[in-house]
Image 1 (tube, one colour):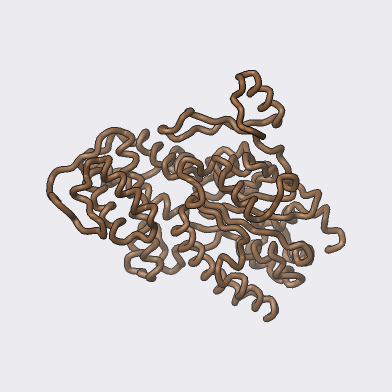
Image 2: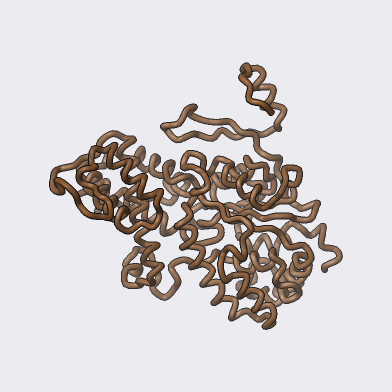
Amino acid sequence: MPIKIISRNQAADMMVSRGDQFVRIPNPSYVYPPYEICPIAPALKEFNTTPLAAVMDMDGTTTTTETLCIHALEHAVRKAMGSGGPDWQGLDPDRDYPHVIGNSTTKHVEYLADTYGSAFEPEAIGSAFLDAARWTLGNSRDEQRRQQVRVNAQQFGASDIVADHGDAGGKTNRPFSITGREHQVQACIDIYYQRYHEILAAIERNDRTFLDEIPGVDPDRPLIEPMPGVAVTLSLLKGDLGEDAGKLAGVADPDNKFGEPGKSAQILAGLGRFFAEHPVKLALVTSSIRYEAEVVMKEVFHVIRDEIETWPVSEAVKARLRKRFDEPALCYDAFVTASDSSEIRLKPFRDLYSIALQQTGVQPEDFDSVIGFEDSQSGTVAIRAAGIGRCIAVPFSETSGHSFDAASFVAEGGLPEVLLAHSFFVSGLMRNHI
């Protein structure tokens, strides 16, 4: 279809022809127009054709990293508040979490600036930005982050006191303030990323002394883990379990929430046989930048490999799984991050999921053979806007207050519910595998 300027009426006619449901998505404050209107795919649930692909969010759907993201956001707000930071109670789960999980970092920080900005101290933000900038320039492994810090320092008039490689340059002691909403938002984004990347660096070097000081961290558990049911689900969908899937009922549902063990074993065995014959393409889709996703998933796969060694499956199956989870590239057919797009086109926009569909090789006429999993409102909107009608919300504690109007189904019990209570929505296709 060629580029063409059209009238309002023509635009309305074209939009109406695209479907019955649309979504209004607000743009970042510096983007024209203020919002965009997108058609969303008709809602689907049960598969009528063989599944071709599954696309899954990372933070909160595949991994437990949302807690770290929230900590880093609270750190940025406290730094911006200066003297008032230590007395701030932190984010309110009911009021704040729906606005700071699942969207782009820019949208998260814009919300925080609008909500708590009246308590921000310009000099405190300036001081915190300088500390964050120097750490980033000297320690960050992400060049895009380093470049953004340089750009922001120039815009803030701080180039003379922020130098490359983390060294203080020029007049290191002159007072420095950051005023104005847009500049304060950009500074807080840099402060957030610095804290998050500092934590990731500590994870990479296994610095438990540093990590155990983070509020809410259990020193007896890995800092980042797969969400419940993730390891079993990924193993199933890639066709690696076969009949042995039935032996994992106690792993997928240790508390028997979704049925008695014998029935659950029968369901999983059937799914194992089905997906052994029909393995699907897998895509990880995250609004985190690539460096973050690589560190997080490396840690998650390490935990999964340890978990697999305890599974009551054959040695042949374990050998396949050890290879599958050796690294993300051996499990995922597409690994899509914010680094593949732009900050202004992350979830709830469709772009990341559209990239995932292209990388998995699924054509538009087959989008009804795809299933998507998300734990946030923005993520479910992005899936439907990308043309995937089978959009399953898997909320957890931090996203339980989100609106999931865009989801075609809400699985409050997460992936274990999807597997055991709904047979991954393929029960109509499994007659030869029961």
